[in-house]
Amino acid sequence: MVRPFRFAVNMVTPAEGEEWRTQCRRAEELGYDVILVPDHLGMVAPFPALIAAAEATERPRLGTFVLNAAFWNPALLAREIATVDALTGGRLEVGLGTGYVKEEHERAGLEFLPPGRRVDLLARTVEEVGRLLADEDHVPRAVQRPRPPLLIGGNGDRVLRLAAEHADIAAFTGARTTRDGALLPLTAEELDERVAAYRSFEAAAGRETPAELNLLVQAPAVTDDRQAAAKELLPRIPHLTEEQLLELPLLTIGTVEEIAAQLRAQRERYGFSYITVLDPYMEAFGPVVEELSARA
Image (cartoon, rainbow, N blue to C red; front, side, top):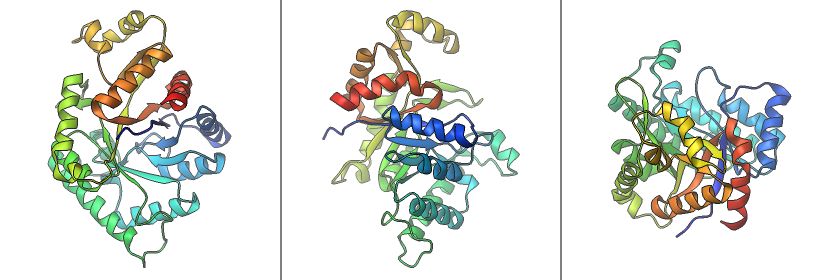
């Protein structure tokens, strides 16, 4: 089964009032299918921002990319989800993850748990929120039943298993976090292994309709000179050669036609049909959205 492409913009740039609404309307004009909001301190609060995005637009769905499970009590989160889904006419998609920024937990007065315990917390949140939203007596009541679509993001084995068991959308991170907190991009072969690990779980393999697979694309560059653009990025990833950098799945560099061909090839290889970009690259990536939405 080859899924049609969906494209999302993750709104990481804080904005106020009409500026925020203008940005959301522009995303809709460019053809993006989903407007996403992250869950980081120093950025806009996700649920009020999504309500404003819904008021400013008509077509795009709205989502969180992704909520930090440590920031949310499940009962309060279920209330937020149901309220926003109702107020947006059933346009909400819910993304959840473990949270990975230690400094944000400290600023919020929360313990930064070891990785295994953060996954435990995520699992409890997914299960309890799902239970509450599916309860016919839960007030408020979400429009989408038994709950809005769920995205779970991450790369570790336990998170992938959780996504296989519960998520409608599995979001893969194109990078891994080192022990000192740095992000290293995954090579094509490393991403092959992670997608294969997800598909190896019985819950993923046994689905009648496979889950949608998502990838966040970093710093897309529409250019006639791929080598020159790659040279500009090399100082950020000094352990890679220019050729290796251009082969990274999370980078899309080239003409509109070259990037479209790359994303089609990655959909064939990995199954990624749901592509997310950050809002600073929304305009540059717009022609790619148009190309692939028209021709798939």
